[in-house]
Amino acid sequence: MKEKKKLREGFTTGACATAAVKAALTTFITGECQTDVTIYLPVGRFATFQVSDCYVEEDYAVASVIKDAGDDPDATHGAELVATVSWIDEKKIILDGGNGVGRVTKPGLPVSVGESAINPVPRKMILSVAEEVLAEFQVEKGIKIVISVPNGEEMAEKTLNKRLGIIGGISILGTRGIVVPFSTSAYRASIVQALQVAKANECKHVVITTGGRSEKYAMKKYPHLREEAFIEMGDFVGFTLKHCKRLGMKKVSMVGMMGKFSKVAQGVMMVHSKSAPVDFGFLAKVAEEAGAKESLLTEVLQANTASQVGDLMLQHGFPEFFKRLCHYCCQSALTEVKGGIHVDTTLYTLKGEKLGEADLDGSCN
View 1 (cartoon, one colour):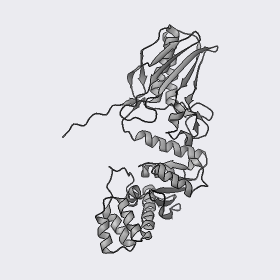
View 2 (cartoon, one colour):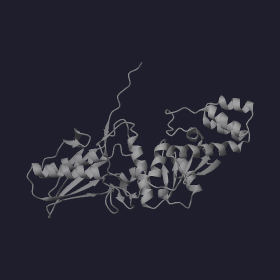
View 3 (cartoon, rainbow, N blue to C red):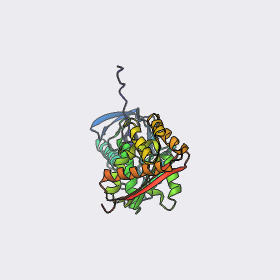
View 4 (cartoon, rainbow, N blue to C red):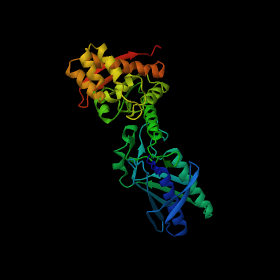
């Protein structure tokens, strides 16, 4: 067997911004441009960063670090985190975001409305490293730090920032300082954050979808709902449902397609392609309940994908199949969260044609 290649870890925007601040402040105090800096990460170890650009003027100094996300590159992979430091009259440290760093416009995030989107842990890292450098060189002055990200506004278009109310750029994130390749923790955290924003904006009815395409169809189906009510859950169906209930959502609408929702219908709550196979025996059972005869059931059992089963049901005129499949999705969802919420499910084709829907009110359970 081939030995699996170990995936390379990367660094968060928070860690890169902190390194840039250390380089800029050290340069400003000493007058000597830094080529690399070492900082201590929240994960509990030191890391050294190369400084990509550095210069000092009479009133300020600038240093930058390029983000390397390792073998799990995201929208901010390759971003340049730029720190600019300058003296201020008061003996304190002011931290703000500049061009390319978003600003918070909606409640529900760990950063207050009106502030730059530098999350609590990166903010603490930056302030701590600034205090350390000032103490090391026995500087008794106040400083202003501005973090900026060239092209950050364009990068933010590939994230959920706008939906969350973060306008004008990316967020400076990271609770550990490192990016673990193909980690699910970041995606889970984004789901929780999106749900918290929905709650803060008084959304009692949320719509959870498996991706951008299903979300587009969901927005057409529920045009009266606020943008914050739409949550991309990806493969994390059970996780998302549980957090919907925990945060007090009264109604949850699930919108998706045959591939993943055929798994939800059979009770699978993590629907990644590698997590569980499609149960064609289960789909044949649903087809039989919908009135399909033996020859068609054989075709269902011999199908390669759930989408192919859907095509067969459409071709042979069994709309009841999709209604029943949606009903099973609702049942699975209520079983997962042990009732207490109202759930409905709508199933679409890849082209946006509605296949079926079902509704179950478990809020009295």
